[in-house]
Image 1 (cartoon, rainbow, N blue to C red):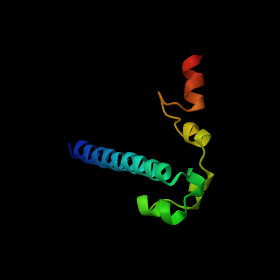
Image 2: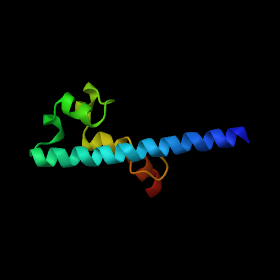
Image 3: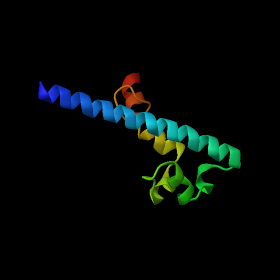
Length: 86
């Protein structure tokens, strides 16, 4: 029983963090739009003001890397889409 409660707590925390990240992403997109910039023009300090875990590797992200990262069952990653089509 303890494991179930522990797992439930972890899932709840993960869901809360994911929700915060989704909200952060929305705010970041809105900020970039109001600045008239795309993401590569934002400074690391600007990224940090939205989420302190951003690092230099944020500049290596592209639409393609975001899609490819969605490699979970039912996701939109290339491997998942190819598997669904097979």
